[in-house]
Length: 97
Picture 1 (cartoon, rainbow, N blue to C red):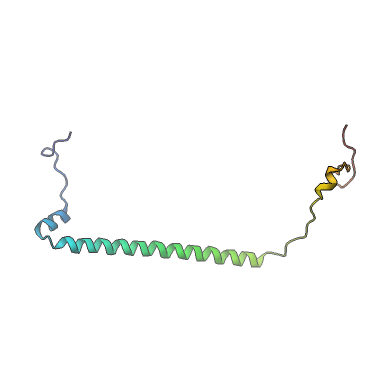
Picture 2 (cartoon, rainbow, N blue to C red):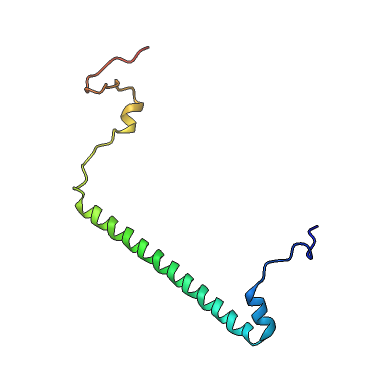
């Protein structure tokens, strides 16, 4: 266990101020609370701006995209009933037996 006499803790100016004037405790507490409130408001503001920017950027990108292509999905019933497979060129090929 460290010896407090041999290794004194560093001086803490706020503790000295509070020890000299107990009414300073309330002022120091209020200053800390206001500082934390300012930090919280700053973080919330930056978060709101980032979310607004991302939503705006998404709208701009979506407006600049072309119209979606029409695609036709293969009918799963036709594939189950033994129709011949088709390769990439669309040619019918025999299924290996």
